[in-house]
Length: 448
Image 1 (cartoon, rainbow, N blue to C red):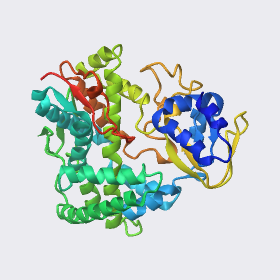
Image 2: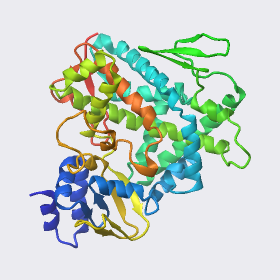
Image 3: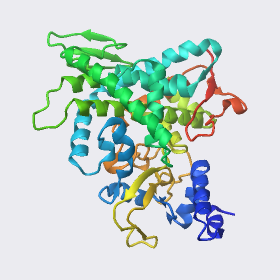
Image 4: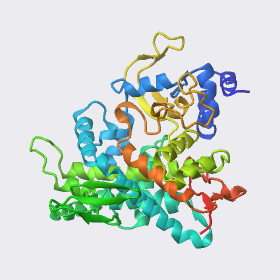
């Protein structure tokens, strides 16, 4: 029987079994479940939550932040990092802090960040070359963004293991603890205190270094004019800037905000902590799942390799985002319905969503909506960017979308540039989720 046939066969008063069935579909076969919902029940109201599956309806939910809010994140985020813009809608906190952080994460830095990611990944691959294998999740997927967190964000952490733990325990609570397990939350709160203590001490060091350059490590910089214009080598291109940029923490620490802009040291610590929390686990998952999709598609792989070998990033990146569509790191995002609302009004599927409903907006499902995405089951790099929702949509589109947008493809490119890179046959060569929703281990093979 189909999911809906099974669901409808369960007695109305057996809420637990109905919810269990839907949860099973979401976590083990989201593409199959959402395909059925798109065709038969695109706005699916269950006793515990509402599933939204069509492209325009997902956009509508994520465009109506005054109705579909992120308030459910606040009880998990605020005790860990302090009042956070990610848990606020249409408030001065969100408006102000996102604007400040966007100013700090300058788009002009992206070529440098991409070069940095490539060099970190290449060094890790060189180190493992003698074995002919590398474990992608931890040795590349998490390792590269943690190093970026240190070298570009300016948040190196006490050591690699601690940074991995900090990233995981907070992600586990904020975005994966759907049952509100108090032990998971307690571990996250403890992590938050450790991070803030570390960052508070580092902040004072950053403030004391005002005016110094903090981002030159691993980048070829040549002074070419008296006014400190420098040329930075970026593969086959050269970019001129007035000075090598500081890391993000240094920018925050040395910026003098007007007295009527309430962005104090506590706010700096909050936003620096969120840079780590928001980057490591999701980047690792995206790298791992995208790589698997590319390597197992033998008809596509030669074209991807050709783009990588010719250093055609524009074409190569299209293959990355299309591959990720088939196994995205976030198949849905959670919202809270603040008031009664009719979704998709004026259409045959118009559905009233009651106030206080939990809504799961299916980003992954939307990217397979054939009414918007042409031939959605085909692998195509000719799709417009608006077909993709990898970084969300609307008011809460991921702050780090541009940084991740260069780090993820560059790491994958460095992997594919290795001679004879391939999947390992059998179970060893599959992504091992170890009973969770997140990749824990993925081993690939390659030559020196």
